[in-house]
Structures are given as structure tokens and as C-alpha cells.
Length: 363
Image 1 (cartoon, rainbow, N blue to C red):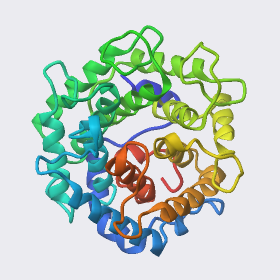
Image 2 (tube, rainbow, N blue to C red):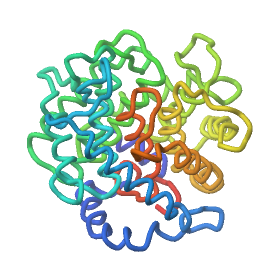
Image 3 (cartoon, one colour):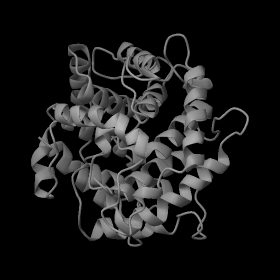
């Protein structure tokens, strides 16, 4: 199980149901007072959520709620129509505001997301829409979503399909320790690997068994992707250059696999720092939301100056990019995807999702 890996790193998690109780009790109080006070002067907890940010989130959530299809799904165009992975991300965006299935202002939207994701689960454990061409991306997001829901509102159907999703991930890990687009153990890349590792981490935290050797091999694969400059390659062992989005995925992978210290983490974080808004190194716009989704998580889990210097800048960039008329965001993957990603990033200081209850600031 992953528990032994995490324990070695000095990181202990509360049981998922205890987390749920704490979170639910704290919802009203936290919403009223904002984020918890910082434990260090270098952390920016007290100023993480500005009035403008809160207004942007409210407008974004309202747009996302109205955008939901009658069958509960999300997806803007082409192969993204009725996409289980994007639907899962939308559900996580609503949960980041404190909603649960049937509970909260957007509780019905979370419930519909959950119903669609559960209906997309196949007998072999794969969670994917019929028109998905690279289903393991969406499967990772869907596994994460089911694990977060199950950890706070457990029921037997979610547990059964979550267990099958985890078994599929374990079965599809290739000999190097990574995952790729299709549910077969052939090749691997860093971007699908982080989706898989994060889903496994969330499932483990919700009480689902995850084999320890699966995580150990994932750590080995991610470390083989790291380049001398601290960034990460897309594929291990091919000598490809470092890039922002894949390096964010690499650092986040190590954290979610239970690695919380070491030179590989420091070098990865230092590589990512150069892409902080205002630092002068431009990000790859092709993967802006995907890259920042993981970069913000990496900085959150690192805490201290990493978080304090990165988060305010990306928060302000997201506020500037929001459509002033509709409240949505646009970018790779379409409006549904970009809006869900932006909302998760902007609401990360809420700390409502159990998977974010790590070593981040104020945890």
C-alpha cells in the first residue's frame, strides 16, 4: 500500500471520514472568514482570496453550472463532448467551493457530475466516454473525482467503481513505472503519469488499497524523466528538453507519490520558479491551464516562499483572462475544461478537497 511510502516521508494523513467531518464542520466558518491564518510570515494565507477573486469564482461557478448538459456531462467540442474527465474536473471545481453531491448551492451539479462519471465506468474499470481517443487522461481525473467524493460522502457504488478504476491503473502501469494514453502497459509519459499517480493518491487517502510497489515504480519513472536543469522530459530516457507543463507534472507526481524532500524536488521547484508570472520566462500557452493546475499544486505543497511568490501572480493572471461578459475562461480543451481548471486553481486556498490537505501552507 502507499501508506508506507508516505509514512517514510514523515507525512501522516487523517482517515478520509475524519477529514470529511472536519471539512464539513469548517465550511461555514471558513467561508465567512476566508483562509486560515499563515503559520509563517513568508506565507500569504491571509491575502490569498481577494474580493475580486471571490467575485470571479462566483461568476465562473454560475457559468459552469449553467453549462452542464442534461445528462450531467461537460465537454465543449469534438472528442470533448460528453467527456468523463472534463466532467470530473467540473465536479472538482464545484467541490472546491464546499459543495458535495446534493449538498450546497451547487450540490445538484456535483450529483449530476457524479452520476455521469459513474455511468461512464466500464466493466474492466476504465472510466471513459465512448468518443475518448486518449482515455487514460480522463480516467485519472475521474478516479481522482470519485476518490474525493467517496472520502467525504461514501457509498457502495462509488467504492466498487473506484476500486475497479484503481485496479485498472495498477494493471496498466508499464515496466518503467509510468502510464500513457491507452489502458495497456506498453509505453509511458509524464503527463498521463501524474494523472494516474494523483488518482491513486486520492484513492489511497479515501481508504482504497493501492499496492506499494506501484507507487515505488512510479517514483522511479518520474525521477528518470528529470533533466540536469531540474526540469522534466515528456518521456523518460529520450533526452527531450524540459518544459513548464511537464515539469509541473513531474514535481507534482513526486509529491503525490509521497516524496516530500530531496534534491530532485528542490531542483524541480527551482526550475518552475522561473515561470512565475512577472519572472520573465514565458509559459507555453498550449498547456497554460494544465501546466498551472499542477504547478500551483506543487507550490502549494512546497509552501513557504515557493507558494507565496507563485500564487498571487497566477491568481491575477487568471482574473485578467476571465471573460468579463460570461464569467468563463477559454484555452486548450475548450471553455468547459479551461473554466474548471481555472476555478480549481483559484479555490485551492479553500482547502476543501482532501487531496490538497498536504504539507501546503497553513495545513
